[in-house]
Length: 105
Image 1 (cartoon, rainbow, N blue to C red):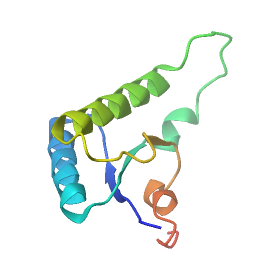
Image 2 (image 1 turned 180 degrees about the vertical axis):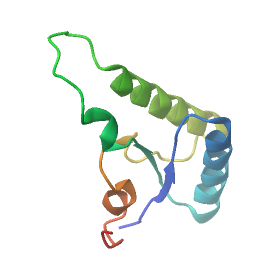
Image 3 (image 1 turned 90 degrees about the horizontal axis):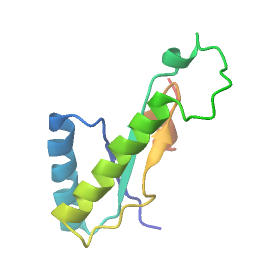
Image 4 (image 1 turned 90 degrees about the vertical axis):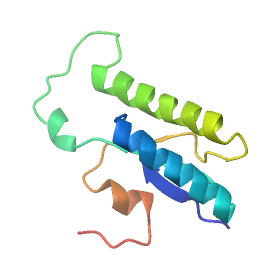
């Protein structure tokens, strides 16, 4: 099994430049690309459950960031597989979960 090149995305200009670099590296080494968007759990700790049927703004933001990143990969190099199409991590140590070989802190 080929391990993907994992790259974090955050929607910033610098993050998109890092994504472009990762796409070039994935092409150079013939690897699939795994996009990871991680948010810190603390932002959810004081939330009160709502009765709204609308999706939380943070979830919409995450989907938009990952979607823009997936689209950018396709525009930069259509031959790169994005696998999975985006991974949303709302966990304490996202890198540990994205890379199962990394020991927990």
